[in-house]
Length: 243
Image (spheres, rainbow, N blue to C red):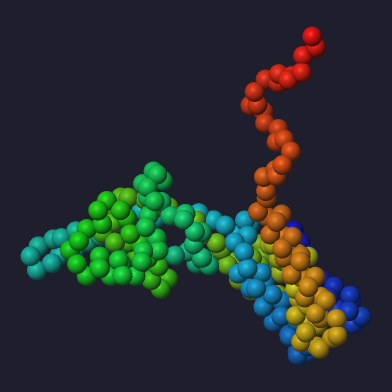
């Protein structure tokens, strides 16, 4: 587990030649509360910049039905809207699949096509169409019992002292789930800009560079050039044989 918020903010102060504080979230000092607000701004900025692997999740929904009594007797009502997870931030692109995962869901469906489907009797032609409407994933004419699977990114990158993930820093003992150095440098840069410190531009450049480096580490990479060793490589045969 990383350092707590109080230690990170004091690190920013000490590196800049300012006195460290006993508390930030519980302080009545406007400067202390300003640092907490900056920390939350930077946290949101970092989360929204890239779909970090630590925040990526996957889930599925199962299409449900219910029997409703109508004027002409009981009819089956198929549920088309399903609420997104509480910490949902964004869908992972091209991740939505149906059934056994081999069939791709048309998501997000183009608006013209979506409303043409909604306001006519035209079927989906074997394709499952979907859109996000409000805080719901809405399906067009789904099949009862079908499973819709998708990947998504969580907006909870702060860990409370009780171990529960949340969206914002609210206590001095909260910790950060992502790259701690990037968060510290981001707070330092934004704080220096707020305080009109002359070195803030240099700190912003350093912060931006560290964000890029963190993305590179998070994304990983394949070998470029050279020879990539594989366990299942073919038996080696020398091209040169003595006469």
